[in-house]
Image (cartoon, rainbow, N blue to C red):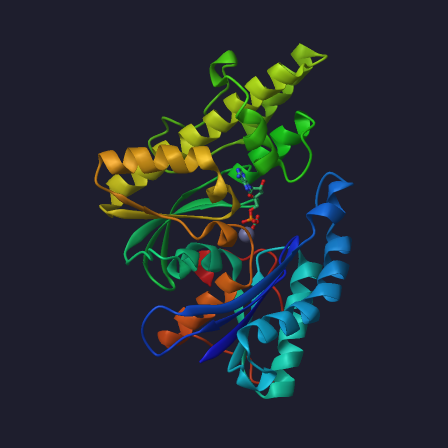
Length: 342
Ligand code: KG4
Ligand code: ZN
């Protein structure tokens, strides 16, 4: 079974071909990605209308590239998966429209996939795939959630952010420090030159006892510091970046360990763009190693948005008889879509 996956929920156009048998871990045959970072950089963030227009330009050439890389033709595709939500409505519609039109022309099913399900299953394409059950820490630009994952589609929400997402905290703090977009990697790079102890920043809900997060106060504290410093020098910037990163990582690590304790799970999967953060990885690896717990990550290239995770999620749903495709190729997108309802 060959599944073409199309991701277009935000600022990356991703296409991939994944092969799956009735059982066993699916295999990535080829993937291609176009990042819109350069285009949005001038605006300091994602401009939704420009994102949609660029997805339109990229998606078919990327599909052609993926098929060529895999040595496959359109006829070899058994079904087409696309990101149905959550994400930017116009951007999602590009992937959904192209996937549905291709599927209709090929007389194959078109399957709408939940973006976060793609992220949390993405470590199954790594050299060290996890086993169910596990805790998933989903940390992207729009979401921060801890889930208990018993199988594909069997998810229990353990906790989530009550305001900003972890990625948003990185992005907004980076913007306040004049570090540009996307803020996460920029802030992490700057933090390497800084001393985190130079500033004391809040860690909201750190001791709340539940598994919820709150990052809005952190952003406000960074803004206050930036205003107090006035003409901020490079060293202060680096120190503040390091302190911000440490505050975010502290909360993510503590709550992840608590989720592992509460559920009794022996492994955790970290997925979504913030999962690429080196300090988060180092801290979580060290804490889990102490407790004989396993941590799984997607391959670095599959941490941020990509088509492979979308094809993979559809493949794993198919293996469990859990896919439903609209027979008339009508499609709709779900810009706000809780994973629990997927
Ligand atoms: O999962 P993703 O690619 O897109 C969404 O679905 O949102 O995540 C993007 C987020 C952005 O907030 C970005 O700043 C953050 O992931 N990010 C990072 C790093 N790389 C990406 N945050 C911290 N450190 C990184 N190395
Ligand atoms: Zn994402």
